[in-house]
Amino acid sequence: MNGIKSFTWFLAAMLFPPVCLFAQNPGKRLYEIHNSTSTPVIYKQILRQHMDRRERTDKLRANARLAKAADLVFKLGRVYAVPNPAVGVKHPVIHIEAGLADKIEIKIYDFAGKLIEEAVLIEPPALIKGVCSYEYKFMSEDTPNGACNYTVKAYKNGKQPLEAAGRLIFVKMGN
Image (cartoon, rainbow, N blue to C red):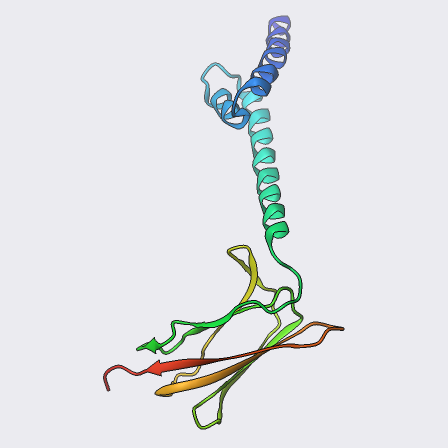
């Protein structure tokens, strides 16, 4: 009986790899073999390990492609507030594209020039649509009615700071 089992394993090892290599989608073929009722349980465990390894490597490759596509160079891209005008919204978001920065300083002033809010972002940027971006959510509960100005400074060790400024308009609704 052991001779038949070892021959079955030998036959499976000889037959399945060429099928997987020549199939149009080898990953799909592995799932088909794994889900087959005629595949032995031990071989299913080996296939599951192989499929898990394949999925992990595919994710790593996808992340590497995204990192290559991302612009990690320290340069100022787009800086804007969303939504602008902020109609009935208390917490708009300031979006900053500055590559890979050490820190980002944000200052928000009311129309009279009084500092309303300031923040320092030190966490790594998020990858948004292939661009390294920082986002800051306006945190103050007492939002002004009218225009606010904001300034953004991005710092990188050994480089000149990058600066940008913009205007954010608040429109209060109701009482």
